[in-house]
Image 1: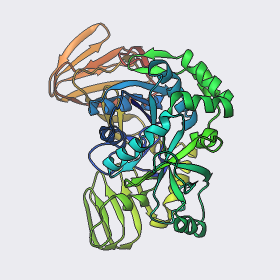
Image 2 (image 1 turned 120 degrees about the vertical axis):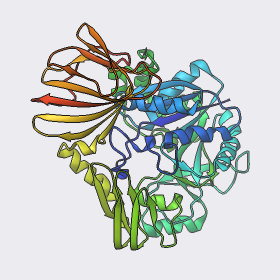
Image 3 (image 1 turned 180 degrees about the horizontal axis):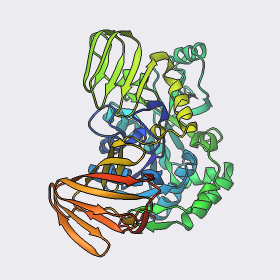
Image 4 (image 1 turned 180 degrees about the vertical axis):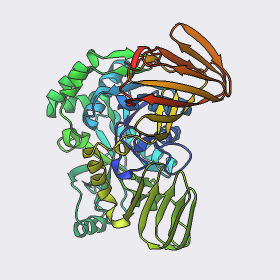
Length: 471
């Protein structure tokens, strides 16, 4: 049996402004109706003997990840929460320690949650080709068959001689991202593959190599699992233990050192979509070479990627640009400069700009809210509460709130009093009064919240009860 382990802790800052710290690229629908995380789950149907899915993610993304996984209908064994990211090697070690106890003979398939694979059948065939090698104790990585001299990927050099199955080749070395001249030589040689970051091995095999090459990392991960606690749908790792683990990738911690690394070629339309320009490789362009998403009108525009999410975007007389619009930010960059988007995001973070972290529309386990307007003494939000969901019982020390129901019915708690509000009805919540709103109906509840006071930060919340386990 193959146990999938989806690593969902990335941030994807190069895809800003769609990707934000609290809404990273694996949760976005970039190439279809499903998010990248959901597509990662769905492509597992191309593999035989698939077991339940394990997924690791950052604690701040837990409700979004859980909701998207629930929508797939897949068998989810565990959602493992990382308080802080420690890269892929510790994440895989945590999963291996858990899986060893439950499925000691199973093979783990390590999958980043933010890749595009256009041919799931070819992907499934590659996994099947590597399974017997993994069962024998070898550590399998999947090397993408290169079709251009890419300088943004790491490469893997292999031996021309196959081992066992004709598709499996011994790994000779991992090499860093090359310059263009070296990348051209790699492409011409036929001995180099792009490093996909996808792995297949038995839990025991990986842990043995980790014991040999990164024993302190293994020790901290073992302690993090032993002291973990179950919290509703999640497994919370022990924060001090996991934070003490070195931050390292599977490549650096194990694969570059082990003598048991082998490679299976992967020719399945793979991309890690690490920058906006890479969407040209996975999306279909029009006759002028443009890719247009959303409400976009152009004239005399060539080889541009233009993505509109909330309003009409027009362009004229342009070539080779990236234009991405959201409700609170616009990115304009040349196609050759998209790697610098990360630097823009770092500058936004240094300036403590909210646009680096969240969208105007913010997701919560109970639904969403979007800031419509704000000033020094007021803020207006559009709030949507999912059927059967409820906000926490809470109070605010610096603001009062007015709730106006515009769609559905709301059960409102104000101190000890409970009232039901229908459309066009409202409630007033004074400063310092405990309150809650619940949607007991089967359709979404929508309301307008008007805040008045001296401070409107999300940290002005004192919770006394929350069904989602938030502090």
